[in-house]
Length: 592
Image (cartoon, rainbow, N blue to C red):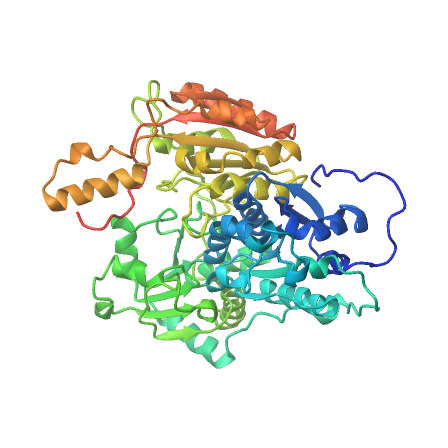
């Protein structure tokens, strides 16, 4: 448990008395353990109810210094638990601040109960000026295109249904945030009648949809007839049984496997059936693995058509049979293009990918008589990766990943975040909590908050949280570390600091080449240098011990060991690692 603030001992209310008490009670009843918040007068009644009615327990309150951190912490928590946390945002201004984080969580398909406030809706109750500019007629419209559902209940009894429905929807696959807006006037209205609260067991989400038995049998026939089957494991739960079933499916078929750095760990990367290390963009070996496959099964792979187009510009030229199991189309609308290109699917399965794996395994066990087609040793125990040449004097971006793998030993490390362009070939995933994926929507400032939320979810588990992020990501989200310090949430944060918005340098170089202009100017308006921000000082200003800049690998190793010891003691720790400009894996850029 996080170190929560304790209320002054006294006589707590034994019954709900105010409209906001109903909302607070419902957060407890839907199973929310924590809420992150940045205070605001629009929900002062709700805040009082969380403290003086619930006693700051179930949910417990985590104060944040920015609304973006409020949401990203809840996002990180969901990455570990597959369950929602509460994120409380003040009126329209707080929602506007937090909307970037909500978009990230939506693109990442993570559950979250976002509680907002507006008003008072009744104009006669508004204070001059401030209550007017913090009131919106349809506040949910700000985020409606990248949430699953929203509501603004107009009575205490309607508040009950709003929370039951929101909890049910955010937990149901495909998961995504929901938003409930509380009228400030309603929060501060005294209840004059009893409220029917309902029972949690009657408002649970249904089991995720499964494929028909006929479809599973057909898919099994197709996979068993394949000479070179390929499994694309995309989104998947943190459930250990689901992890084991994915391994069993690959071994039953003797199929090659690919996974993505954009998603959480779904398959052991040291397994010999891994065709290539986890990918961002397809390297030549990955392209060959896709091109040579005669049957491809995608299990909720994010941007499946984008993967295919890296192999075939015209995906109609693909000869492999393509099966795709996903529920994601249930969230597809017109505003955001996060639905990606439409893949040419031969066997579409509108079903949960974890459920499809389970169904397939059951059929294949019978078909193969319990004799998997692959019966080798599961772990190849590869040699420790090597550092880059010149590592005694300089840190290459991949060297941070190499250092973590070389130093981890048997430590149960959870990699909370990785930089854009992470290599993926050195740090290995051996279980579903070894790597927690990306930010979802590629929005900067998420890395620090995600790390804090993951540390919150894993506190007391024995796992050591480590996060690697870029300097731009950290600088935009640095004050999230204050929440880690305040509530004693242990994590090692390493900034891979190239002193530049380097991805954009690459884009400026691409444009310059296309236009025949000097590429030497790509750095202008991009470099974060002269003066270089003192990142370790920023961390210390939030109450987190830190060091740096570290400029060579021997010093980096010693810093990481100090950081891991601090995390073992229950403290956050920070390292500023100055790395050479570049990427371990170069991202794609439009043009050449």
